[in-house]
Image 1 (cartoon, one colour):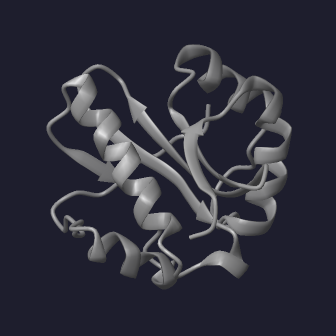
Image 2 (cartoon, rainbow, N blue to C red):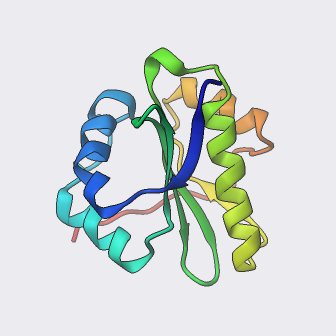
Length: 140
């Protein structure tokens, strides 16, 4: 990896994160991300959104959400031209270290069943699908 830096996002970078997600993240099966929603998570927990940055350019993201009880991973995304270069693995490791530092003992990752491309990285990092659970959702 070139000059890869992993660090929390800064408030001024949130518009660039939204642009990055439109290109690098799976967006078809989820509600659209909004500036207000991203600002809200940043204000609540400024270290939750971890960026992978090379030469001042965002090349990857993960949200490492901690609610004081559980550790949740969302929006793992890597620039399509930089995939399979260890960026996703580095982001997952940084998120897991954040969780350990906060006292977390188990992490879960939100991964769409039909996003087969993402299944490999999660499995390679020790995650497995938990068949006895289903996610139930309701729009608010």
